[in-house]
Length: 184
Ligand code: IMP
Ligand code: MG
Image 1 (cartoon, rainbow, N blue to C red):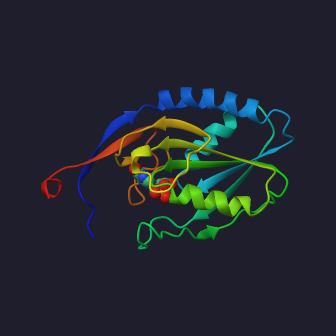
Image 2 (image 1 turned 135 degrees about the vertical axis):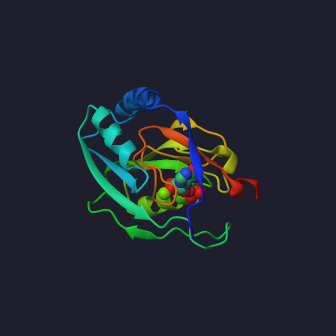
Image 3 (image 1 turned 45 degrees about the vertical axis):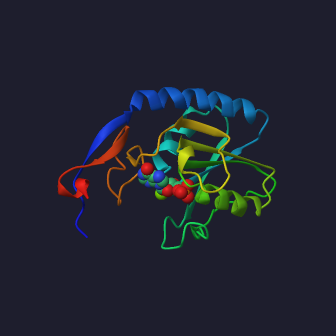
């Protein structure tokens, strides 16, 4: 299928993201004060830029691990099942864990990954998402920390893709379709 034509309108600047991450890092340091070594788990692939910036802002011992879950398949909305494509490398039983997600949209991914991580018996599990689209929620879940709440728009950049494009955009932009397809 050919790529539909679109432009990207700036939504959140790289500077605003950096400033927000500084504040979030202070809150995370406080919440995990006394933690020997925090396991920061990035949910691939969309969180890779966010986790890179976040851990460099954290003034504490961290271990970095990744997990990859299947994204939107062809499952129906209500029974959407999230499969693990790549599991953690390290152990999290009895440990303090911070799960890092790019966007919470319907909430299915975050809710199910939380369930999967909880089953491994962490001592504490907290979650952070760079973006939250609360108006799109289908299941009840909220991250402990949110970078920015955004409206129901399709966004790209800062690690987040549209059909595997635009992950390398340094800011968050909103996709706007142009040309004939936009009128359909
Ligand atoms: P959820 O299970 O519906 O909450 O979906 C979460 C995942 O969907 C995110 O981790 C993203 O990978 C993807 N996603 C949701 N909204 C967007 C968007 O606006 N742009 C790109 N990917 C998105
Ligand atoms: Mg994704």
